[in-house]
Amino acid sequence: MKLSIIIPTHKRPDMLRECLYSIFENTNDVYEILVISDCDDKHTREFMERIIRKHKNIFYFTQKSPGPAASRNLGIKRSREEIIAFLDDDCVVDKSWIKNILDAHKKNPKILAIAGAIIPRNHSLISEFSQGLEARADTKNNSYFYPSIVNNNSYKKKIFHNMSGFDTSFKRASGEDVEFNYRLDTAGIKTIFRKDIKVYHHYKTQLWPLLKQQFWFGHERLKLMITADDYPFDKSNMSIYYLKRIMTPLVDPWLRLVFAIRQKRKYSLLYLPLGYLQQAAYWSGFISRLFKRLDN
Image 1 (cartoon, rainbow, N blue to C red):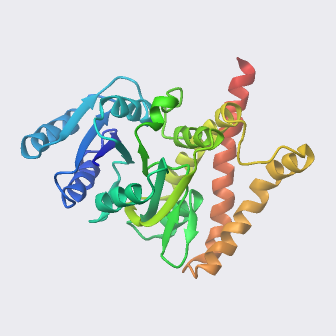
Image 2 (spheres, rainbow, N blue to C red):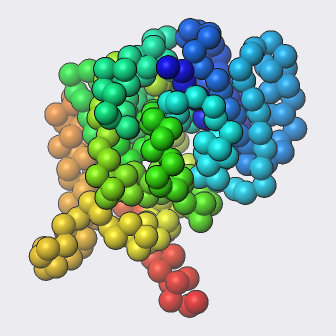
Image 3 (cartoon, rainbow, N blue to C red):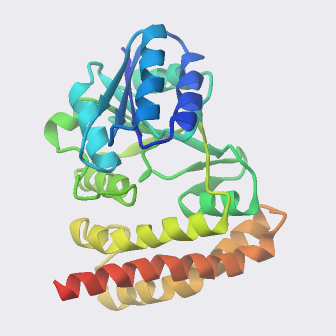
């Protein structure tokens, strides 16, 4: 059993370098790496040409279609191994990452999707807050797991024989992974979690980049609600469903404050105003997309 590691990238050769070198510290003969850039960036291309000369089983592709969805699909098409692992270029992996992925699939031969822990590389108020936005906390192990994020997920390749890959109409890194995993769940394919499969993720460290990111997440949320039928919310009682939708931006910052206090975060009280700023940015993006859709 071997592993194909697919890494979308976009003009971040320095981060990509750290990512690749962390993989090289793992076992060298049980994987291939496919790096896919959605633009022909000179610096990334020159870096990859040097890397390919030094390391075997690493391949570099460029394509014109923007976004990680299209890049991952190209990686799936070009991959040769029976297990596919997705990784973001701003992550570094644990020294036992590959071994633990393959062990997990060997011990769970009927499981098609396995996710691992996401641990922050940088510790600051903004990075820890932004991490908490997209993950469920494992307080005992200081790690996070969210099955809709694919930057530490692995799949048996045969899963892609029966369903299409990522939706390339998502042109940004904003919702394409969530939509993909919603389809998996709808098809009855469950993701299991292994806390020993670890990656260390570089989160946003400044407020403006975080708010900008949240704007685009909200912008893509409307599309996600339409294409994935807003899966996380039960629609059996529409009154409760709409109440949940309305209450989310009001209640969510308070839930994050409680989470921060329970985690004994140093700046816990700042999670509340940050939460409302985040919600304002997110729903501004959502409303912007809604008006654009109504205009069309």
